[in-house]
Structures are given as structure tokens and as C-alpha cells.
Length: 130
Image (cartoon, rainbow, N blue to C red; front, side, top):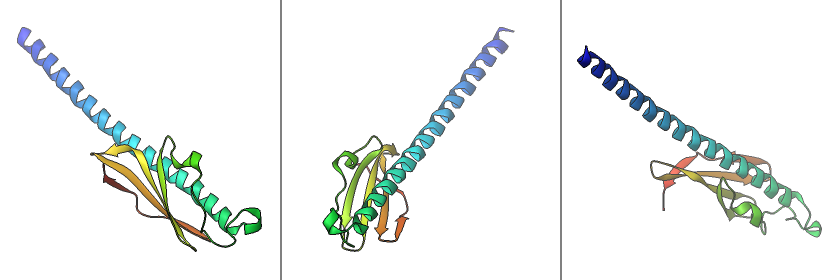
């Protein structure tokens, strides 16, 4: 009887250990997806600001149908979700967001192409951690 109880205790500990590992993996995947979604939301906000700048006349502090001169506002360049960088052109820009979460030692990275009439998310990827 003592060996059977010991075997059941060991089996119970193994099952609980497996459950904890699976729970940690699910949480990590969920956290990474939440960060990717948050970075995408921040990029959409920045893209909207860029399009507003594009359409605003130069007399009112806008670009006058050009993205040239638009920069990411300092308060939005780094947020709790990640950091953002800009590659600007006259008629299009690309904003890249680097998240705060890592997946297998790679950081989350999302890029968004912005034109006067469209906003397109490039494929989200996990870039090598510097």
C-alpha cells in the first residue's frame, strides 16, 4: 500500500509540473501576441498622424501634400509597447515598431507602409535581438 501511494504522489507531481510548463508557454505566446497587437495599434495611430500632416497645408504647419518634414512626435517615439523609427519619402513613409516582448530571443518587429490614401501593415516578424 505504501508503494502505491508513493507512486500516485510522484505521478501527481509530474502531471502538475507538465501543467505548469504548458501554462507558462501559453502565457508567453499570449503576451507576445498582445505586444504585437499593441505595436500595430501604435503604428496605426502614427500613420494617421502622418496622413494628417500630409493633407494639412504648409501655411498651417503641415506637409502640403508631402510627407517630407514629418517626424514621429517625441512623446510617441518610445512607449510602453515599443520603440518606433521612420523612413520617410515624399509620397510614402515606412514606420517600423520594435516591441518590448521577445520570442525565442528575438524581438517583435512590425512595419507599416503609409501613403496619402492607404495604410498597409507588412508581415509582422521577430527580428534578432541585438
